Length: 401
Ligand SMILES: *Cc1c(COP(=O)(O)O)cnc(C)c1O
Figure (tube, rainbow, N blue to C red):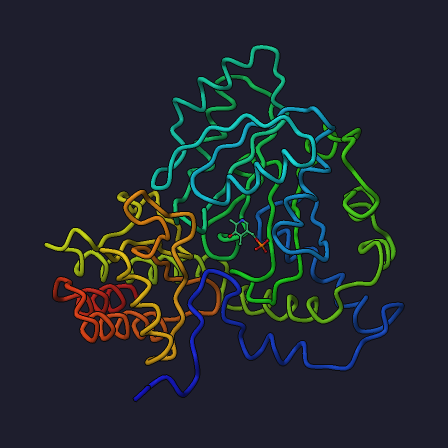
């Protein structure tokens, strides 16, 4: 029999759970795009989006997913043949590099593997080797959704400053915005890429770019711009239509309005703290399951280097993780994320790896529920695991709440 019927829980790292309030805000007739509720409401989005990223500078929205937002960033930063230094800490840094290469950007890649953040010493050496200052921008992922590695963005800024290298610092925050702390201006970040369907709890379809005055100034002549990707008219818009280069993403914008209201009603720092506590809850369970069972373990060893929106972990030997995901979906109504880009020679399909998302509209009962159903699945499938995971998870929740 199956115990899956009831409200399902999609615990994959994007799209994330959409709050009923966001869905209700989107449930309306097509609005007029020339006057009225939509243009009036959109003026309230810009200050809240700036506050979300921690910037007083620019923000724009494109009808696009994260891949589109990467292209928007690349097109506004670079001319063909310009150099980008990509710091890869999982699958998504590599993806951004591929997108830049396909647009004609000269990419130098430093790959730090699948379980570690950027090594500041290697980053510094690459900057020092660039005596002619050919690197125009450094592209890095804040939280890589495949590995769940989190990079220390202020530390990267300090390296750039210590070397005296003028490259812009561009950060992919698609998986971390609204989940992990981000203070764009204070941290000296020049560009942020975001998307609607993760911590922002809105369906996929909005690509966001935040940019510093310095980035706008430095990139005035970026030659990869096309009329659609160019940020100039969007950042300088006076009239509603100028933000969109075509029809606005009407319903997504009402959803985003509601999600920002929810975030700021809770308080941005409280939202970050909730994600941190739920992440620690998940980690505590994995640590208990993995005690004495080395085939189970978190992908990132140091808690300070783990993102708060998603946890990547081994549940081996393959295909244990894939079997467990199947059991959870079929028997318990929970869908976990696949192991993305985590194949090894022993496990070419990545079936000993999975991801638990805890981004956006998630709370203690959802997280404890996922962990308890995972444990039920391990029992049902005879996947050996250490005891005490749910007690450990409950202790984290009790201590945090
Ligand atoms: C999800 C994600 C992307 C890609 O976004 P899509 O909307 O799937 O194109 C890029 N970077 C990060 C860090 C992500 O989490």
